[in-house]
Image 1: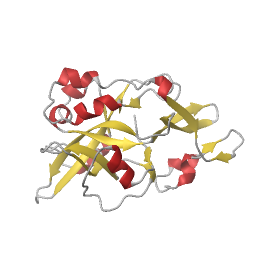
Image 2: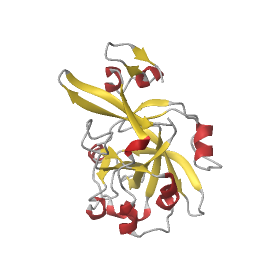
Image 3: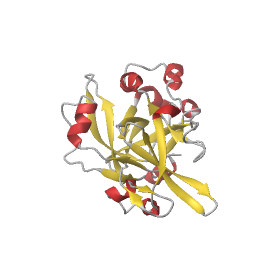
Length: 232
């Protein structure tokens, strides 16, 4: 699964990266410990064909759900079965989004316990997590927009750490993923592959990342075996 990630660049840098002219996000600060249940930055394609940057609550709530708490059980969607699941098959066709990130965390089992690891591109640049979104309406008419992150089989970098990894879209697939006119599900499913191992790397970080209340640059510092921290 993917349960934590980072997005540490500025709002202006994100707008340039995803060719966005306007955004409804009033303020964004670097996030070092994005967690389920939080409002997260997401890119969608509007009906006019322009990319928009907004916020979605992480944890998808289907329109037919009786309780928004179901979102905490839908922070991830398995890419292999998303097309057949009632909560995900509709969004896979017409409500796809990108969640910008520059790293994600997974916990590796060791003899001494679980070691948190941060996985990034070797270039340390931003990448695009493949997401789905939905809008739920309460009985009183209040709307809630939510999302989930698609996962896939781990590549050679992630497999020693965890048995799943988030789907990272290749840059050349970002445009088609956001394209609202593209509804060829088998083709879309073919994009949901493990990211090339030779472009990723993983390093250990401190245990503080386990607490969602912690959110500062020290969380992404490399935790050396002897306990010494080294900022990247």
